[in-house]
Every structure is written in C-alpha cells, then in structure tokens.
Length: 415
Figure 1 (cartoon, rainbow, N blue to C red):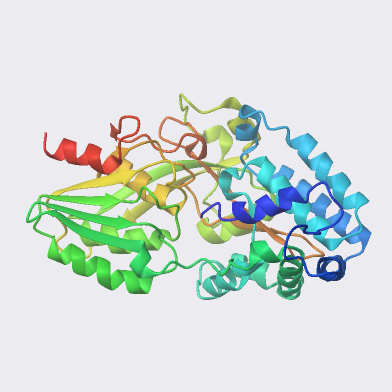
Figure 2: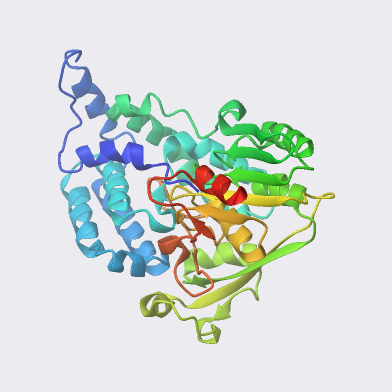
C-alpha cells in the first residue's frame, strides 16, 4: 500500500530530539500547549520499562523478519545507529509520546522500503473493518483486534491529537471520492479512449459502475489508454476485476518469485495465505543473474506465486496502453507487473516505484502499547532477480525526460 505515513512523520522528526511538544508562535493560547503536552505524556499508561520493552521488541522483530536489509545497506542507511539513537530517546524521556515519536522517526529514517510503516491511529478502524470482512486474512484481523491494540489505539489517537493538533486536524482517513479518482475521456472518437485511475483504494463499489460503463462505451475503439501514473496502490481486486477481467480476451497468468524470511511473526501470515507447502527452501531457487547475494543470504525460503485472471466477457480487441511513473507502487505496481508478464498492455512512462510482488503487509504488534508496525513479508523479484521494491518495472517505451507518458503514448499510437 501507500507510504501514507510520511506527512505525520515530518512532525515526529521535528520533536525527535526534544522532551516537550510546545508550539511557539502567534495565536498560542496561554498555558494550553503545556497542559495538553502534560496530559499526552502518559496517555497510554505505560511505565518506563514498558516503553523500553516495546521499542526493543520492535527492533528484535524487524531484525528477525524484515526482508529489505540489503536495500538499506546498498543505500548506505546505518540502521544500527538509528536504532541506538531512538532506543536512547525512549530510555531517557519519561513520556508515552516519546515512544510514538521514536517508532515513527526510526521507521521514517529506515526509508519505508517494503511498506515499512506505523499504522497511524486515523487508519486503524478502516483497516480493522476491511480485514473483518476478509475470510482469508484472519491473522491480519486478529493482530488488529488483540486487546493491546483494541484498547491502545483509541488512546493513541487522543495522544497524537493532543500532542500534534495541527498535524492531525486534517487527517480524516484513507478513502478517495469517485469524482476525484476517475477521469475518462474520448481523445479521438471511435479510435482513442483514455481512463485515468488515481487510486485502487476505497471507492471500488462506486467506481465499478463508472469504469464498466465507460469500458462498454469504448469497447470497439482501436486504442485504450489506462493511466495509473499517479496511483500508489490499494487493492489488487480492484484492477483484477474492473480492468483485466473486463478487457481480457483470454485467461491470463503471471508467475513471480519472492524471497521470504520465515520468522515466527511472518510464518503465521504466510501459512494462511499460501498453505503448508507454499514455501520452498532457498537452496532450490533457480539462478537469477541480478539477484543480490545479500538478499539471498538473509532469506530462508522463497515462493513461486501465480496469479490468474479469467475474462468476464468478450474483452477489448484493440490495443491497451498503460501509463506509469515513479509514484506507481504496491497494488498499482502489481498491475504493472501483470501487464509486463502477460502482455496485457504496452507499458509507457518511467520506471515505477515497486513493491508489487507480494501480499498485504503484515503486522508487528508492540506488546504494551499495542502499536502496529507494517512490513511486506515477501521480497518480490523481477524476472532477472533484481528487487522489485528497489528497481520497480522498466516500461516498454520510456518517456524522454520531462515528457508526460500520455504524450509518449500518443506519439507511439500515431507513428
């Protein structure tokens, strides 16, 4: 999914080295900041030992489970120093806010590869509701519904609002209205149609009517341009059902490899998603020319996963073009990978953001605060063995510097 947490983390970084949360400047109400900061300081009801235990637990679980350490090392990120800095912060500051800030800031500085992020309090109920309705994701729901998180997240929400009121006033949730999410145009009557989808998250039921109606309208066109260049992800079901199934003329399948660190935390999720026999020993992984030695070294197993989509009707018999760019991530990247592997669409634009080969990010639940940290349990590989998170997907047709993918596609269409 999106790296949605960065905006909130900017505030966290501002306070990472200080003991208070005081805001200075015009409009300050006398004594208000001091009182709210004092109230927030112990709103989670944690002792100093519990805060330190939570941060140590996070560090230990990440070191055991997180599959992207090779990427961090290649990027020159000193994760040992980052953990030490925020471990000391939690130990030296008598505040529950310091734990939240330390976790947030540490994850931000680690870079967010592989969906690494804190589940922010404004998203907790939406995520929990979504997983409650998903039969094959019971482990995800159970992690969120455990007493520590069920009781801790309302308090965490109050604490964050008290400590950082300006930053949380506008944080309403994750949905996108359909009117903002879908743009459909007829570029050339009877020949070229254009459909832009900015998110695969939150508006499926409303979008379905609009998307299918438009696709039915242009089904006889020569060219259909699908623009996901601003799309950072959401649900794979969205694109499988609304795009591939509606437009495919035949059954399409995409197969990819992913590395796994089968830690105790990761194993329970993967067993539910792939069954007892889904994982294979890393020694059986075929030779791949661009697989980094470090990525293979820290993996214990790998998965060979195939995604198949059946057509829902007669399909589209013209040519499909997919516009992409560096914002394409998560499930939007999964759609791009599927197009690359199956030839469903010609990909146009610039290299994508990656991390589209895998499953829903899983949770590390901190034992005392109930704070939930997400990470991708699968380290997806491109066909040559390079990291999909690190390199994304290279388009079939690259846009020149400064040129919009739509311009590049139209030039190719009219060549």
